[in-house]
Length: 434
Image (cartoon, rainbow, N blue to C red; front, side):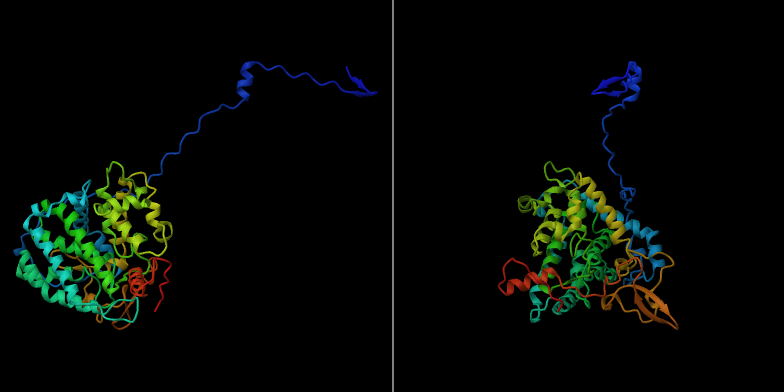
């Protein structure tokens, strides 16, 4: 019936249809708890450690001067599919595994085998050569100091006797010593990068192939000899102002080095309280940096920068610190070594092959391209391209940095050293392109 309010007739409200319980349940959506999204999985599995083949009898080898054999992208593809790649991966990853869950101080030099003492002496002798070759006065320039060439020449003249004391067969000394000479930087460009660091590992690999460094020495190599080499290189870099070999640094980890992060992550794999995020804690870096390579590298990197905070200076290190555990970091470092060091032509174009670390069948030879300078004299890196009647020039692949070896970049280490000489504090430092 219509109702009347003040003379206005209004229609009556229809009665709500009665709903039974089952109809109500069907109309109201069920409340289900939100499920956490599954953690993202890296589609690229972490590289495994290939088996390390036993050394061949050195009497069956024909030793020769190592030379570059990766002169094109095709050569690099052949290397990627060769047993030599597996040999390098096996040696490096075995060293990393030998450092797992161990402090640097866990290796006692007094109890190390004699060959470790001899390797330690070689590094001490190189430190002595630095004192014999003081840097030249450059008038405040931050670029490479030419006295670095005197250092390399002196090392080259003295190293045959060093290798004799290590027990290297005389016919193998020219080949093996080449890797040591190239592990301190490029003589012409006065720079240093992950490729030179790799040469030091290849030098140790050659000694392993000569049965001088059996697997029982791997923990001492990873935690005693290699950290001493890194300390030596820090001294050389700060003394002679070595420029970073790539103008972009080593992918945001460090201007010069990569492998200490791999070995260092292995050291921390199951640490009870140091987490990846702990690299932002200055107290942890100060107290534990001498025991763990990863923390030592972060500490040195932060000390060389004028801006505080890894977020601004080393963004990749900052991103990695968000990893759930050190196992994730270690796996990521393995992937990066395979892809960004061995897998990059601008790095591997400088790699040297001999009889102990042989090239793959079908790879180019330097003599095939007239006019290619030896590695020690090379000013710019790149892929060799043949033009016209035997003309040779260097270019870079389209998928790589075009200026990886061609642009001179002053090091932040040089800027810090010059600031100290001028009595400047720890404030903002400008790095001039002088």
